Length: 230
Length: 222
Image (tube, rainbow over all chains, first blue to last red; front, side, top):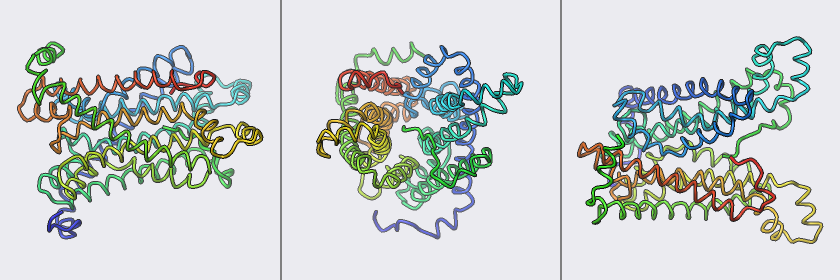
């Protein structure tokens, strides 16, 4: 570590706005866009896989194969096409979220009990209204569980994008910290990245409670979240 | 782009010398294998213990979630500054990456064993050790293998960062290619990493076939 202290508060104070703040915002942007895009794609794909069951195995294989492509490799492979734009980071990260979100959307919709479905039909709900008012709300906890896993994974993966020079907190770690052999930016970047992941996780838990008010009455006991073992 | 890459790949100069593909591939596999082995040695026993006793489960999952949120680059660079360039920072970063999936899956796998089967095993007079080794481990094996596979894929892809701290591996092609503005080299290195990831999937499919009891194999393959 040399003579440099692990954390220099003066450096943090002096660089709070420019490198630290801007990199944090970049990081946020690079994580939120793929998550939203991923959800936007995973919902219709998942719904389609539930309606036409034969689609699901092929879809699952496809997203898993994409998930197996190393993120660093994918960033570099996209560089010739998208150069140093936002898309070089957003496209791979979106694809990765699909491998987590699509199975969760499908599992969530499978969670809807048959008698609930029949009751909705008996009440005269058409297929679309049944999906929007009954099936998706019941699936919310499982979908949010997937979003939580995807959010943490995406936020930590954005740092890798910095190796390609796409910004984010990883850039703070690499350019300000590593190139200058100065530990403070590395600590700041790492801590902020972890904090961001925790905040995102907490927000998603909150979102789920808001979206599923009927579960709150039962929340006294242990919540039987079908967490994905991944 | 395929042609471009093929030109680089088919060049005999790539296949010999200390910077050739075979050497880099061997380095890459060596780092990945070592990191995976270390992670498994840490995570599997802990996961078996917490899963079997049911104690410390919350802590285990919390620690794993925290470790999952750690940016690999940050861990790598921090250890580099603390301990200097070499194998240690790479191993620290890769182990931090590989432990959570193995740990969580082992824990969940053992916890998920049907309590009735566990009672039956005890009723048959099995000792705790045997309950764990003869019942819980075989039943949890599909999930444990899945965790190892996830970890292996992440380790193989992330071992690329070894090049950034100067100890070789396939990442060298990416780093050097970027520095020399030779894109075919970057693409070649990236594609080799992809090929390794596919190789990992194939190996784990074979392992699953060889190790998992036939009665358990139909369970959802995820």
